[in-house]
Length: 257
Image 1 (spheres, helix red, strand yellow):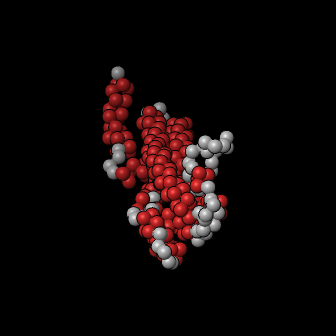
Image 2: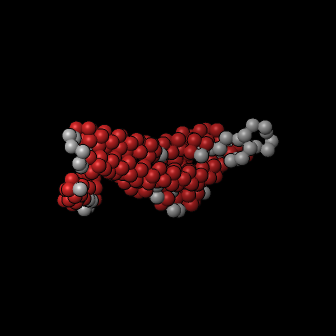
Image 3: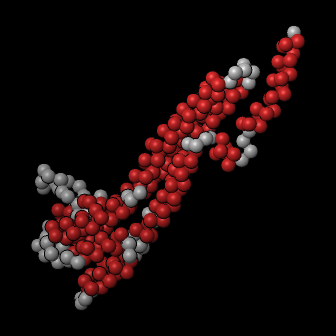
């Protein structure tokens, strides 16, 4: 009976120390208790924030296709003299993806529609690559962060069982095991907290790029018809299948659609 009483008294005395060992007082304390794998997980979260802010700035509609640029180019092309020069000036002054695509098309104005279409498609492919830049970083982090958390979990479990295995006394083993598992669960949670927002941001920004691409495609198709020289067949630029042929028509801005 005395041995049981002594055991309970000793366990009660050690309880505050166990609580203080695992208590989380701040976010920094949370990160520290997560172990070494919290470093790459933390770096991943910073990368996600940086890429997201940068892409939001680049993918603003006003930055991709400035308001009034399409009308300005159309107005310039309708001038009796200096139409091409005025249109090129309007495109270059915009310093935007749409402006650079239209610059490529205006530079070959008056040629057959095949030449105009090809030039717009090449420029559109280049601009689409820039719009999608760094998007793969978000998808990689969304896949890698849970794995980093899993590695941290494994390290935590190894530490927990190693501590118990090396302990020569039965008393306190439960607390030591719980502390290691606590560290393991922190890394798992941290990995998921980074991966889930990264995945959602990736799909949200991808949808934004798709909407911008469709609008660029619409403008380029309309502009190609206007820039093509006499004798060109505007029906070839339809975004749907050509009704007079079994072969689907290829849009002028096929590379950006």
